[in-house]
Length: 407
Image (cartoon, rainbow, N blue to C red; front, side):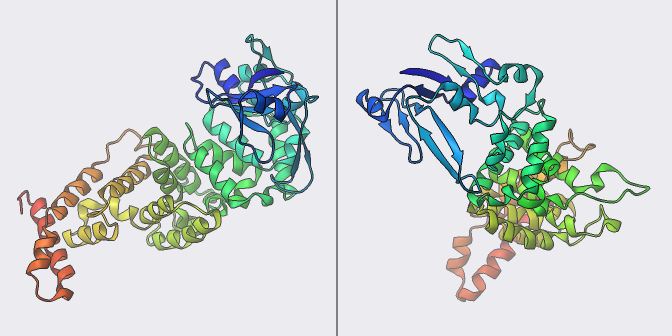
């Protein structure tokens, strides 16, 4: 029995990055031998075990064979005769197909170390084309390592996988899982740019793909291209270290612009309702978690008003706060403001600017929340009038706040 550290832990150690999770491959062992040493089985599709003390994952060396379309269409074979190189050969990228033995010696049969030095994302073998999830993984690694390029032959293989329909077999849960991870990477725009370049974005997220393609005009500038703007917005969201819900909201806030006539851009009055109409089925299709879906819908519907807080009347301010349920859920409203800040600063001339709108909204929310809704309810003899009076009191409090007075 021989044990090797493999995959991302080896890659990150060679890059000088902190290693959080370590995975191991065991060559020359059987499930019975692992159990005899106290390992606990956890794998369903193939033998994976948890170390009895460290609880790190140890997988028996295995090969795989394609039997059906999609990423589920594989048969795995684990056997003591499977070699380390055979196990590494089934991996996606050369930089993920390296191993360290127990003495710390590097095993690198596919040139992963050279590709690390050259900053190239390159597939290990033609078997890459058998698993459509690998398209998403390559795009995600492009977002994690923004200084890396995708090898031309790997990009060509990704395009062929899209053209053959292999990408259409991806299930919603896996697509969302990889997109969510990519949104949380260093430069998430590179994920969507890579998917767009190989044609996968049009299949997986057509609502985002159609944001580009504005005809060249005499007054053209990059921000007329909504795709360019949205990519800047999600990179700003990453720079601001926003949460996943806020980053997803940043990605989807302008979907309505994709169906706005190019002749009127960058003006897009009234596109918010179209954005919401496009966003709802997208969330259903990808089975987007409720927290991400709800925040994205709020940002899509109200980001324009959030930006122009300084010209809104107190009654309009309060209506928006109530629509966002900000009085009961101020922490979620902070997420709305964060996504709107990313939108505002996701422009070449705004990146270093402050976002004073957030301060104004916080002040309006504080004034509205200062109203004692319970006292108003207790003093109101007509239950139907309770929400009306509470709203009026909040408007009055915001009006006083704007004049520098206290309620």
